[in-house]
Figure 1 (spheres, rainbow, N blue to C red):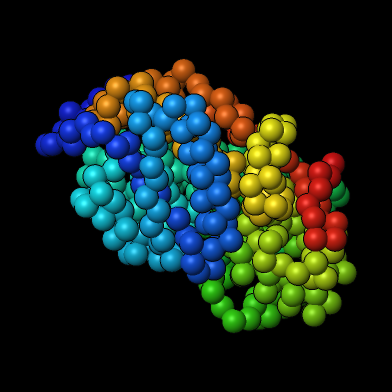
Figure 2: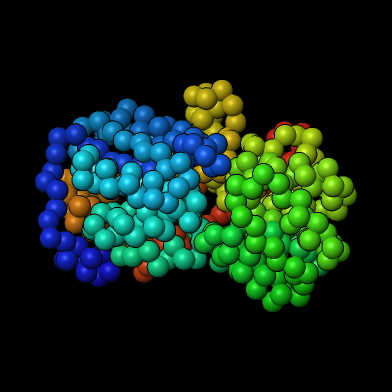
Length: 362
C-alpha cells in the first residue's frame, strides 16, 4: 500500500469518474505471437461477458478497447499513449512478450496509469515501476520447476535455446542457475533472434555438444519452425523439452512435435467451468495458456474499479494494492501480490504432446 500511495501522490492530474467504464488492452494481435494474443483477447472477452451479465462495473457495462502491438515495442507504446490520452482508460492490460511489456509498462508508470501484466514472466518485469502489477508468476519460479522436472526425467546434460530478449535471457539464466544447483550441466546456451527464416545453424550448434536433451523456449511461429527443422535434421531422436510449451504448440504441426514434453503455467487450476465456457464460445480447446490469465486480469481489474468507486486512477491504484494484499481467486488460482506488485504464487503443470493435443504428463 505504501508503494502505491507514494506513486499516486506524485500524480499531477487524475481523470474524473465517467459513466462508461472503459479499460484498455495492448495485445499482439498480429505478428509472431498473434495466436497467443488472440487467445488473450478471448479470455478478456469471456471475462467481460461474465462481468456484464452480473451487472457490470459501477452499474455500467464494462468496455475494453483493444490495440494491436504487432509484437513491436514502439507500436505498443504508441497504442498505450492513445489509450491513455485519447480514450482516457482507467487502466491498461498488456502485453505478452516481456520485451514489449517492459517498455509498455515503463511508459504507463511514467504517466501514473495502472498497468496489469497478464503474461510476461521475465524477472526484469519486477523493476517496471510502482504502478505496474503482474497477474502471473515470474521466471525465477517457473524455471526452478522446469529444472527439477528435466532432472527428474534423467536428463543431466542439456543444451538450452532461448530467444535473445528480456524474456529469453531471463529463462536461460534462471534455468541454468537452478539446473546447476540441482546437479545438472548445461552443455551450451544459445540465444537466437526471434523472427528468423531458419534456425538450422543454432540447432546444429546445440547438437555438437551432444546433450542428453534439448531445452528450449520459443514464441509461436518461431517454435513451429524450430521444431520442423529439428525434425528434418534428425535431432528429435533425442528428447525435447519446452519451457512454456503452449506459446508455440498451436503453431507447430503435429508431425513435427510428436512426443514433445514440457511445462507451462496452470491456466485453469482445475476450474472446469472456464474450460467449458471457452470451448462453447470458440468451438475448440485452449490455444495457449494465456487466455485464463487475461481472463483473471480482467476480473481483477473490474473488482478494483468497483472497490475504488470510480475510474479515478489514484483510487484504482489504492484498490489494486488492497485487493492484491488480500488475495483474489480466479480460474488460475489465487492471485496475491508481494511488495513489488508481483504475483507471489503460481501453479504449473507438466505436459506432453499426443497427436495435436497437449495432455497432462507426470
